[in-house]
Structures are given as C-alpha cells and as structure tokens.
Image (tube, rainbow, N blue to C red; front, side):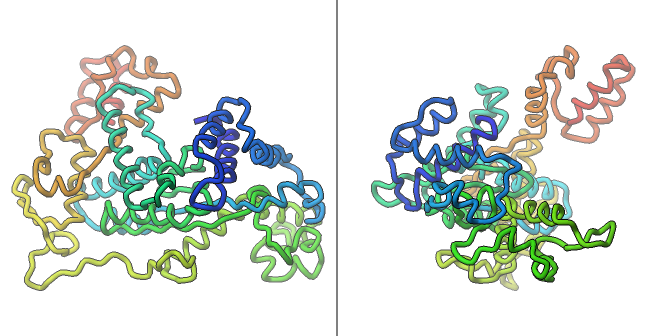
Length: 450
C-alpha cells in the first residue's frame, strides 16, 4: 500500500467514481486504472479526472482552516458542497470478547478462542479488501505464506458466495480494495465503502464472526456521508447550525449543547471559556471524528438489540442460542449438546461444535503438529481451521521492518530460533547460562521462548 495520504485519496476517489449504485458509473477497468495512476502519481483517466480533482481539493484544505459560517464554506468550495454522491463508512467488530474467550477455564480452549478471533480480526476481514498477512512480505515463497494466500482466496470466495451479484454486476470482492480500510486492529474495523454496499459489508462482518465461531458476539453498522463531511463533520441539508450560532451566549451554555460540544466553563479556572476556547471546542468536534462518533453510537444501539438501523437490515435482538435436550450428552464447558467424543485427547472429553472449534484452533495456533487429532476426520472436512499467524511471524515482521534481524539473532541461524511450546523449554533456555556467554544469553533465551 502507499502512504496514508495517497491511500485516503484513492479510497475517496474510488467511492465517488463508483457512485451510489450497485453497478459502477464507469467501467471497472477505468476505476482500476485510476487507482494505479494515483498510486504511482501518474495522470488519471479523463473520465474520472473531475472527481479526482475534487478529492485532491478536499485533501489540500489547510489543517487550520475552519469557516466561520456555512455561507463562507459554500462560497469557497462550491464544487465540493454540490457533490451529491455520498461515501459509505462501515464500523464493526467483536463484542463481549471476554465472555467468549474465558467461558472455558482450560488454557487450550482460551488460546483457541483468542486465535479464532485474531484470525477473523487480522486476516479474514482484511482479506475482504484483498490484503494478505504481513508474513508474505518477509517470506513470499514460504509454505506459510502460500497457506495464507490460499486462505485469503477462500475468504474472498466465501464473500462472493454469500453476497451474490446480479448478472453483469461486479462481484463483491471486486468492489473492495485495500485502500478503503482506515484501520483494522484491536478487534474492530473502520473502512470506506461505496454507498450501495454499506449494508452488505456490515452484514458480511457480522456473518463472518457467527459462521466461524457460532457463539461469539459481533456487531457492524454503516452510514453514508457527503464529501465535505469527511473534513468538517456532519452537515445537514437544511437548518444546519455552525460556529456563528454556537458562539451566542444563550447557545453554548445550553445543557444539551454542552453535552455535545463540552462545558462552557473552564475546568481549572471555573470561569466561562473565552471565544478562542469555545471556537477550538467546536473545531475539535466538527471533523472526521464526528462521523466515527455517530457510527459508535449506532454500534451501541445495534449491539443492545434496538431497531431503526436501516430498512434493509434485520435486528440483532436475539443472540445465538443452541438448545439442548435433557437426555442428550453435553460438553464439559457450557453444557451445549456434544457432537463428538474425542478419544485422542486426554480424558476423552465430549465436545460441542463451538468448543471443538476452539480446541482445534488452540492446537493449530500452538503448532503442535504431532497432536493434530482433528485431521482426516469428517468433522474436520466440514469446518476448516484455516491459516493462523503465529506470534513468531509477527515478531519477525517487526525485525524485518526495523532492519534489526542480524543485530537481534547475533549470528544464530534464524530457522534455529523458534517459539517455546512448553514451559519446560523456557526453563531449559534459562539453564543455558553455563553454555552461552552472559551477553548473548538474554537475547537467546528471549527468542527461544517466544
């Protein structure tokens, strides 16, 4: 990907050029050519040049500029104000994470639940937009990288299958490009999207969590916004109040206004804020963060099961629930109906489908190749664990980005330094002080215990 400035420019230009319909305003080849041209700093196609100029004009607005009135904004940027094509913005992710991860007391199940959520957050959702895991930057020809690419391709095929396009319409995976993602970390994702696909993308995020985990809670919401709203926050068509309205004495002291823009009194001096302070408070609110705040409010509303979040989306009022029968065997965790008794595991436990998936992901994340009890079974063929990026690959990516591989490993072959799979291995590394010099022991023991 390019730097952040170019990524945002490409994302906004892509949404504007696509339009508000499910079929793009211009041929898909033109949009791809525009994206490549913006990425390389070259001339864009003539068909989309006007839209690209508007996006670049938006990006060129000085950071410190803020109009005193809306009339000033309209007169200074009439083309941006009159741009009617809206841009979609989607926010979503997992909720009640602790409830899902720690519902099982055993470490393999906790590790598996965490690995499963990490797979969705860091691999599956970015794969919607065509982004591959970071380890492919380090070793593009490695078996792990090939496995990751195959898994990402399966995810995009799943996306196209779940949201079938009409004849002659582009596939859903062709609508999404890497530059649309604003961020995708910490269990949440925020991304731009062509306006017609906002509900589809939000539904895809929720469906991916439910289909992969069965019991984990998730939520996703979206809305469409005008071009200028990306820079100056929410703008209503009529009756919009702006800075000149806010600075009136009987306005910024109103309790409702204070709840939105902040108190009109200084916390330290306990005196009324100056005009400069009030102006800064208004500016801090009226920017892109206001759009994110609106989505966060919609997120909480949908998470709580409320209606009124779009005519094309059903309510999430009823969470996943798996009924059981009083005479059926249940699992050892949440007493859900067991689907298998695994003889290859210690204690021959009964596992429900959700617990079985956690146990599989826990073993795969730990990379215990000798104990992959789930392989070559009918249950394994019905649900594929997919690619799991280990902590070691992420650490190697950090060393690769910082250029410190040679400094860190101190001549030890990189393939020799692997993660510890058991606590005994960490203890053995600590006892290596009699063999390795003290200067090198610390770095060796750390790398060998990752």
